[in-house]
Image 1: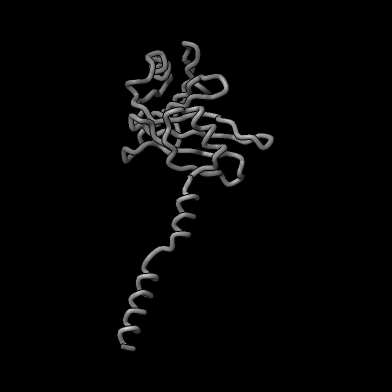
Image 2: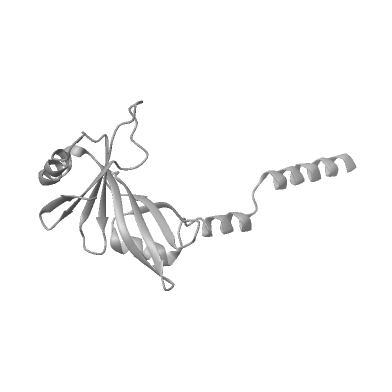
Length: 164
């Protein structure tokens, strides 16, 4: 009989060790939000259909980058800045195909000496004036996109200009 109690006690102890306590699970689920609520609210107002997947502060703590997806599967990045303790949306970025860029933007890029066909295009909508900056990436020797944009073209109110 003593052996049976010992066996039962060991089985209960083993089950307890192998299971996650309810309080730990509840705390983990409650703290699983990738961004603070105030930041998430601003991002959702700027991009209403976004499903936030992650986010984080930069090293100095004055910029917040939030990532998410749209219902069509597009990945979106929302860059925010902090000024006087308040967060504001700075820009909304997403990768797009070169063929979907407005023709005047493609023509402005083609008119530049040493123009190139970009292998990566980031569409960056500026919150301040709703202009769009197209960041164009050149291919490296191995065919991957360069580390930063090789050219930027601003599109605003029907006008395209290559940025210096």
